[in-house]
Image (cartoon, rainbow, N blue to C red; front, side):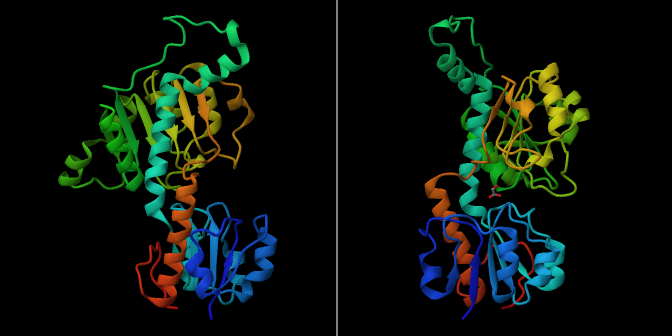
Length: 323
Ligand code: GLV
């Protein structure tokens, strides 16, 4: 019977079918460390990893029985994909349950940064009746009638476009490949070059994967090409943005504001970002709802069982190397 190792501590809802059928090891109360996984992995056929767990050459070389890495995430920049392919290890991800919650958070950050929701909340709590309130205080910027530029028009970008349409926004996008006309019409989006998007957008949302090509996609030069009223939203991966250049742009008014769910250097933003009023920060909560956690667990199970039993589709990002 296949042996399955789950690296992350998680409630069991969503994993029922896998646990019934297979020998599954979960950590107890705390994620397994890299060292713990290294010592256990030779015995396992399947690794269920979290988006921040490094599945690198060293680990794959050590994993003599490993056939499948089922990542609990749509992103898989934690996995050395070319090496997995070289070793004949299949890699799968969970795009479907991630789409709507991540697009919802991107919209939430847009609205929050534009209307200064958490900033006002912070001032009310800390200043109470000393907070200046009046019809010309705490002015935000409008959303309806404004232009959103989406960089990366995959599932999440498309879901965000639909939401932006509902808010009465004009939507531009840039992507490696242009969508066909039918899809562009359905999502109400216009394809433009990267520079045109930077130039015309009031809001810019990053919805592209983290790859060597997208590392520091947005840096000092790109901020200069944006409107000084632009609001940057990042719910994708931190390294897409040069965080030090972003801090400078926010401080100097090169752009107006930002909403960030991910940071360049791991779980936490650089301390200077915490000092700025014109940025809304959340700690990588794009999929952090109970419903999505369970749906992602089910998607991981479907990938593992589909791989082992060939009875359902597997959302894979490498060729399918047979079990
Ligand atoms: C979350 O960041 C994901 O990649 O699913």
